[in-house]
Image (cartoon, rainbow, N blue to C red; front, top):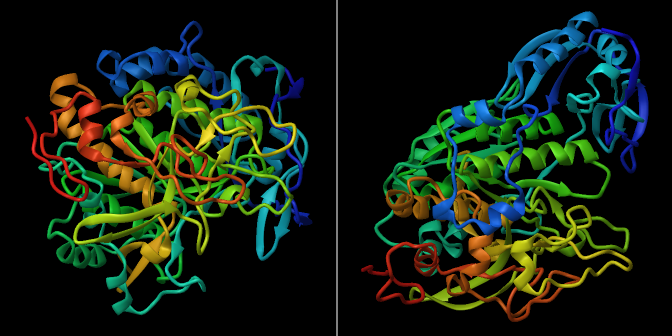
Length: 542
């Protein structure tokens, strides 16, 4: 293969804000990268508009094997990348036609030479990581083949979107757990369709740190409904299920597992542990989408501002393609919208939304503050204390997707910004002072945040799939367009603010369409008709 290299379009990177270069990468440091290649020439996935315009029951949902054959990579393209790698002293660890990826490994000097980049060590706060400046270079012969090279940078890419019930961020005393809600109580208050538990479904949960202990799950589920779901750790690369202390990322892991498991105990759970890097995050989602165990819904409670420099255009495109693939194989993706209001914790005077919640192929999940009495919701407003729900208008994904045409999306709050995808789509209880009872590393506590809303919605989707599969013969998959048409499936949230945006009648950039009325949502999707639906009560069907 000839030696001429050209820049990979969209791969240019600048140092992150407040980062400083501290020295070269050690010459013996092992570097792993994932190279993503094009689809088979002539193949083209359905567009967002095509998916939105096709009723769920009429969609052609592919099996994983069918997808790999029709929309995967040409093995010849994978071989060309492998040949290039071997010529530069890199080891080929994996070639996947379904994921369209080649995983390479080599020393830092070999990887630098292969992709014509200067790798260096940087520091940001107390974190040290490997990164680069400028563009990745690839052989000219691979220009039409290679779409992304992910893994040269190892800076932490995302943060978990959880908030503990005390403002200091530590655990509160065990007796205070009684002040929160059990996930089952929330499901009942939101009228999740009765007599369904997600049986036959598999929920995938993405984690970028932390871990779970089986003994905690045994205790928690025996105290919250009595049924424990089957939970399996899936370790990606060098990441592991590594529980440590209650104030670690274990809180995120346990919140996700316990909320989803309490509302859909019949669904199996696959918990994908990956390193908190772009490569780890993307790789975990790719693994879940293409896993032969066929998860039908993915819950993601991690993210970062879409336009803060952490993501390159090629990174965003690689995630976008993976989310599009999920829709093609019938996977619904629920993502936390963030816990830092409309600025997403960036102090630059502008408003920002969180990614991957801002991607139009996912269900962005915002947060409310819920109060209830005697099994009935007494008040529900925008979550805006001890943090605040994320939400706003995307600067990256514009114009708004067609499924939001009828929603009267708020105008951008940033001067000069064009209209874009509105975030969130839906909402649920998230305020930490009205949060969820969870068990973490032997301790009982209350945790909130939009991190709780994503697994809550994932559990609801598992119930919807359980009910609807017999009639439509596949999972609901890409659900956004149907949600925006299901007007009776939501309770509108009309009070509160997340900073630059205020709640109002109809869709808003705080809580989207509102929180679910589960039985009515099932009915809107073609399920059985709820004949005696009451807020906070059970439903019967005919």
